[in-house]
Image 1 (cartoon, rainbow, N blue to C red):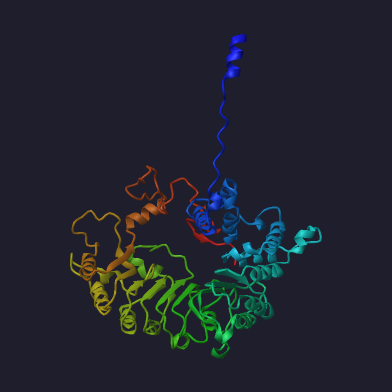
Image 2 (image 1 turned 120 degrees about the horizontal axis):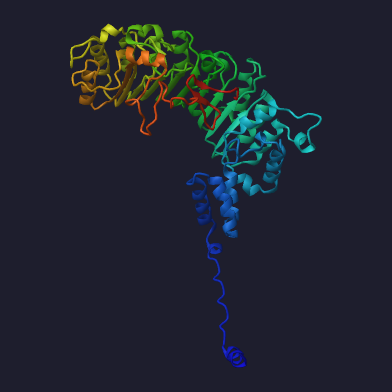
Length: 500
């Protein structure tokens, strides 16, 4: 034992090797920012990954924090107003932006700001609320964030009155990176106040001398109307008007006073009401629009009956013939859920918009009867012949969606000479190298199966072996799902809550 201990004492031990120093701290800030950017963008849960990146090395702390502040208003799971902490995190957020200006300058996306301000506005504090909750006044909180975040590229605003709108516009004046503005109004605002608020907001941004904004989205929230002389003056390349609670007259009065700068127009949830041709001409005179998207405020998943009842279940917006001849520079036109289309309107469009390349008449209906589509395979029917004649006038057409036509749309075209395959129309599109889309009406067999509640798609079985009903849901399921925006998708259509 003594000998063993003696030998062990004489053994020389080498000192432990020192840990190599991390080279991350030597990397320039630009490279660390790029790493943090890709970690936050290319993963399923980018924000959680950025928080993990904070713990890997102190070199990433500043870059990861800037990325976390880049888009902090992301949704219900990331923002405080939905949980029990009330407005405490809103207070902490504003305090952090004041204390650390570099993180305030890193903010890029405030497009959801209007939504959270509206939530706090509809849920005011009470005498029993904490002092921190009472310190967060929604209008002042919104103005503070607009003032502090000088590097934003997207912003959504809730405007209550003209004075407040002018103040917000002043804060945004001269922001070179600002490319997207969404303007919404609280439900309590009167319809007579919308135009003064919007005009003063535009004046605050610079008025006549304001730079052109890439995209402006306006949700009026109420019907309003103003003469041409009272229209707001703002420069915008793309304008989106959400008319869910208003009308086309509202859209006409909210368009810029001068249309020379606007290239893209989106009208969303347009109510199905009669529109005067004179109003259309007055609204779009002098336009240079290249792209128009028009979506009617009617849910339409396809034909609701056989071809014999085509004219009975047609629904949607009726656009007068004058509309189709007002856009000489148009290259892309998308009309969703429009009815009473005919060859004359199509020919007017070809004459008025000679440079049109993409035409989409999605879920739209024509004035044809089902007998107009009777033909001897594979020749063209009378209706198809007139459609082809109108399409021939579009010299630059690349794609067209003809919407819903009055013929039986068989899901399985196994017969070689099926009279409903519309081979003549398809061959015409192939000869011109045009991408062609259209749909027909369900057959009586399909409708009878739907009434029984057991209409199976894809030979009764899906790819997973399950049986599906007529709406494409697994048979026996409730058939409803909710997406991240709070929109419920189900058999009855889309159900949207009362959010702005």
